[in-house]
Image (cartoon, helix red, strand yellow):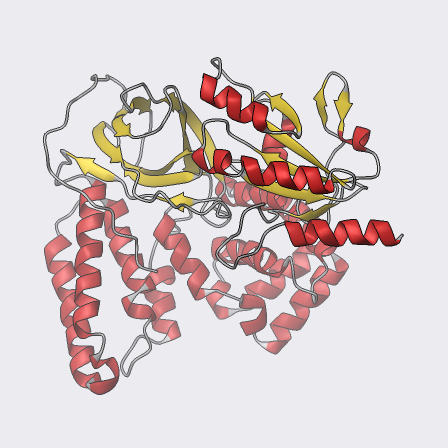
Length: 470
């Protein structure tokens, strides 16, 4: 679970403009079209990792962009455009100069998130990103140097682990950033103290050090990562009696009985940890066969009303939103695509949603494959191309590629519910629904081969054959 290293350099960088806002971020990237948007998100909570959009900015014709954010505390933000993303921490009253380089021309069409490395310029040595990156590099190098001794020289391994911890304490002992100190603490918990070796910390020692004698840091990403590691698969690891009581409470949809059962665990006497664990169980078991999904959702609604800590209430709300999202096996609404067209207009056909961006090279590369599928299977499957309504007129090339598609095409505003309902944040993206508008595959395979040489055509052929036999 090591933090992915982000390259950072110290070079002079052209400042595009200065801002009097709390945090200003000036950057550059390389995209094929002027005015493409970068969307900025913060993590709403670190149990569901729900992202909340907090701003947008446009990239100019030179690849430059800038934006400002007001924040009273250190915050983690995510930058997204196309099917790429990168992330960083921001500190109040800071200025950042960043580069989002294009490092991979062969990004996967099937992966919703393609992480790219962020480059920092002119970064202050006291900045949270600088300190985190330096510590992570040190941690990775240290473990790589002597991890092999864990089995071959266990005594030497224990000694070096102890020395490393002491050195970390000495180097960072005078740091005044509580966020960073807790980042160090829980990162060591996730990595070093999670290793099993002779003399390693017992579960009780870990609990006392990381929870019992520490503040409740529900909004700290590393604290929450450690919490989920410590209580992972809690329902299955709980004592038999507690597990039985949890099961009975879910079957009865009895929230008090549920919380009381968890509270019997000596590690969960703290009500905030108990409440977080109550939500973690639901998150982990929502797809299990033992605890009914409908009961868990009912419990979640009641817990949302029961909890008093606003941060825990937010997590419960985000979990509810996630479980009520459209997914495989659920029906999509009968979306209106233009003044005269709803999905029901396509009658007894399957629908293959083709989410398309006229400026995206991966989308353009699949135009020919989409045309061939449409020619072969249009009698049985309706291919519906959906693309964002252009803010500016399409270029001649973009218009030519769009016109080359022989499918039904619809340009939809950002406000159309389909984007949010189906969580479309990358292009190209495909979804297959049946005649009753039930989602069969989300995401569906693309018309071009993936890494396993799979395409959607076999599925199309099976649909065609079944309809012909009927």
